[in-house]
Structures are given as C-alpha cells and as structure tokens.
Image (cartoon, rainbow, N blue to C red):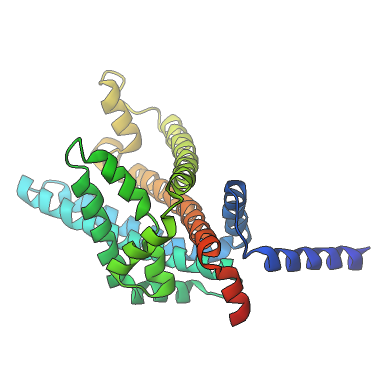
Length: 292
C-alpha cells in the first residue's frame, strides 16, 4: 500500500513537472501562485528574512533619529529612510522574483543565489523601476492623462521580469513588457488587479487582526476622545511616545512579518503571468523542451 502511494505521488509529481510549461487560465495562475508558495515556503521565507531584519533596523533607527529632531532634519531623515527602505524592498523583491522563476522552471535555487542574482541585476532593475514610475506618474499628473497612466501602468507592469530573467536593460524591460502585453491588455489588467486585491486583502485581514489583538492586550489605543482618523493612526501607526518602545517594537515587527509573508503572493503571480504570456506568444514551452 505504501509503495503504491509513493508511486502515485511520484507520478503526480512527474505530471506536474511535465505540464507546468503550458498556457494557464486565470484559475491556473491563482492556484499555481499559492501552490508554489506553499511547496517552497522555506526558500521564500529565508529571502523574506532579509527584509524583516533590515526593515526592522532601519525603522527603529529612523524613529529614534526623528525624536526631538528639528523639522529640516526630520524631513531629511524621513526622505533618507524612505529611500533605504525602498532599496531594501526592491532587492528582496528581485530575489523573490528570480527564485519564483527558477522554481517554476523546475530548477534548483538557493536563497543566497536568488539574492545574489538580484544584487547583480540591481542597477538595471532600479533604472527600470524609476522609468516605470516616472512614466506612469508623469502621465497621471493631469486629469486627461490619468487613463493613459493607467494604461501604461499595466502595459509596463511586467518590466522587472525581463530585466531579471532575460538580462534586459532598463529600457528594454519596458519594451519587452509592452510586447508581451500587446493584444491582451484587458486580460493582463484583470489578472494583475485580482492578484493585487487578493494580496492586499490577505495582508489587511492579518494586519487588522494583529493590531486589534495587540490593542486588546494593551488595554486599547488610549485615544477614546480623539477623532476617528487619529484613533486609526494610533492603532496602525503608533509612536514610541504613545505606546512605549517595547510595545512599538512588537507592533512593528508583526507588521513587517505580515508584509513580508504576503510579498511572495503577488510576486509569484506576476512571474506565472509573465511565463504564461511568453508561452502563448513566443512558444517558450517548446523552446525550453528543445533546450533541455
């Protein structure tokens, strides 16, 4: 009986490996998004650990530096820590994207190798991100340009993956994303929106449950007579002066953990969508079979 079960499990694994490189429906992408995350949780967790450690340290350094600082110094510290936090998030996202791509292609990858590859491609990836945001934000400045900003936000939405997977330059990343999305904009828009909403809702539910639990354990927000928005701010973004450093550290650590654990969801979904488009438009599955 055990041998038969092992054989069936082995056959299922073989079937999954041989049918992975094929066009995917919306449901297939969502299912693959969670199944890949679940089956390679340790790999993604070790990459996320970099985000947790550096994010926690940067956050505490910035908050401590802001306390008692003059307005100009506070503004400079805020800008600097925001940039550092973004760079850390970008590096971790690069590691997650590359690891997801290798896992999808059934290749062995370690967290160190994924982060190292992300570091090697960091400058082109940063340039691609800057071009993306400049283009989308620039188009969205005026009311007339908002529809164009939305259009190009999804048209260029996969630009990071050619940079990481194909070794493209920053500008070619935007061009490659345009080529892949061309003719399927509405489908890509729907899938990317669904992935973003699912990731956001999971993070929101976990985050809300966590802060409500902390609030009940800590005796409430202490802001019963304050306006509603101020109460929400104290609930989600308290300061050490309001709750004390131990409570603040626990709250921020939990927030970072929840954010980190939900990062791979949207990342894996984008990777699966990227390969789905390549398979549909470029016969990438046949190319991989010939290469193998």
